[in-house]
Length: 321
Picture 1: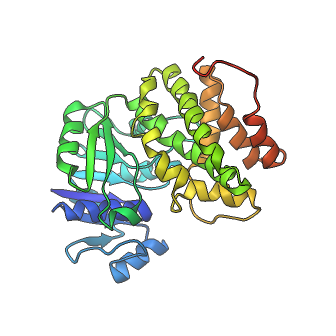
Picture 2: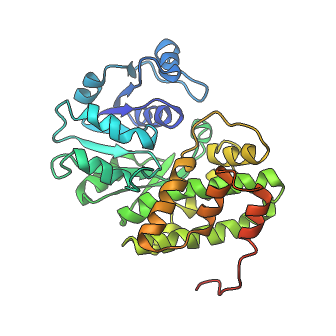
């Protein structure tokens, strides 16, 4: 099968590498001036993995779109809108798109499939999302994990799960696009909070953070019309180990370095998602104390230790109220 992966950063390059290992004819596309593209073009490898000789690395967007029967997008979620404005200049009807980013548009509070639907007729060009736990550093060592693919289009979803499934990644069929997308994006905000606890020496509080974080996001998903149980699945709680504990988690590391007065230079999607979640909480009337505390720390409203301590010293209430 011909597949093009648009975006060749840490996760995009891993997806391209994985789909090539399954025997597909894969194009890996990147921006001409981007350092990650330049290295892959020059060396066919990066700090995480090495491409096979059969893979094509290109900066020609038209060629990549023409090549792929399935188009996978793995870029910063906040850049999806502007990127789609480029994509729709080319013929894409009949292709299936897969969004592999975990984010919510900060300015609008829209899920990424909603943003996609503003530009593309999803009856002619269906869209799916691919989310769940895992880091390239583990996958390239052969360490397996489970992920989920969700879409409003049942046949496309089933086809993708069947086509992408392997001993390395077991895919599950999602059945709640709202919950899958919101849960996947929100785990990055909880990851920021986990890193802040690590940075303050409060690592033992991460168990409580996991329990309360999942409950907080489940309430939001339910208010948005999704299934609250989605927050307890692979898109959110199932991704906590990779996001709240792993040394490779960008969001956890961002939070840890922030409270230590240091700067983390790589992309941490949770920074943008925090603002988007608060926007959604206000829109749907859902209190999001963890997201609000993370926002306060990000905004430097007071000492991180005081903000996080206040979060865990809130008024008494029933655990599952």
